[in-house]
Image (cartoon, rainbow, N blue to C red):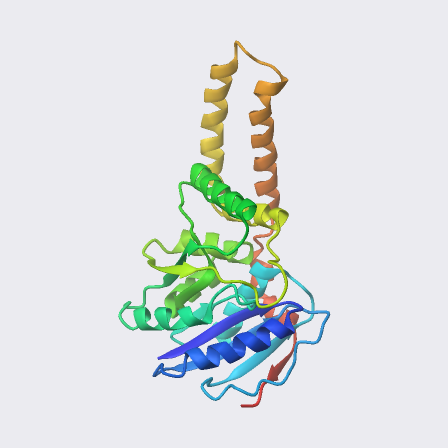
Length: 290
C-alpha cells in the first residue's frame, strides 16, 4: 500500500531534519511505499536543508506556501494537494517538531493493514508537558465533552484512509479544526494509544492561549449542539439563582456568553471557497533528491 506522511512546518528546520532522519529509520522494515509531503507555512526562516538519510522514503516534497495560514489550514491544504496530486491509500498527518513520535508510525501502518479502510486516531495516553499545561488540557477535554457531547482525545497524529480524506475535503470545518472535522464526519474511528513526545528543539509552541483557541475551534464545529445545551443551561441556571442574583452569581452566564461569541467568531473561519482554492497559495514545490 501507499502511505503519505503529511508534515506542516513553520520556522523549525532543525526539528524537521531530525524528524526526517528518524522517520527514515523507523520505516525501514515496513513493506510499503512511504512518501513525505512537508507543507512549509510561509516560514520566515530557511527550511530547505540537506537530508542525507532518505533511502527508505519513496519521495520527499516540500510545498512552499505564499502566505502563512496557520496550522489547521496548513494540514487542510496538504490533504487537498495529496488527494489531487498523489497516489495513496492512507495519509498520516503529524507535527514536525518531534511531539508526534516517529516510532509510532509503524503502529498505524500495521493496524491499517487490517482496518478495511477505516481511519485510525492516536489517542493521547501520556503527555510530556508540565503540570499546569496538563491540567489545562484536561479542562479542554472536559469543556469539549460538556458542550458538544464529543470525547476528542486525539490531535493531528492519525492515519486517514482515502475515503476519509475525501470526506474531509468536502467538509468546510476542516478549514478551521482538523480533529473537530474528523470527529464530525467519521463515527467509526479505530483508536490506538499514543504518547506525546518532547520537542526536538525549544519549548512547546502550544501556549495556554493557543490551547484555548484550539479548544474553542473544536467546539465551534459542533455549534448547533453547543447552542442547544447553552440555552438549556441558561434557563436552568437562571431558575436556580433567581433568588440569589448578584454580580458574582451572574459570572457563569457572562463567561458562557463570551464563549458563545468566541465560537461564533471562530466558526466564520469555515470558508469552503477558500478551502477549495487553497492550492493557489502554493509558491513552489521543492523535490528533495534521494
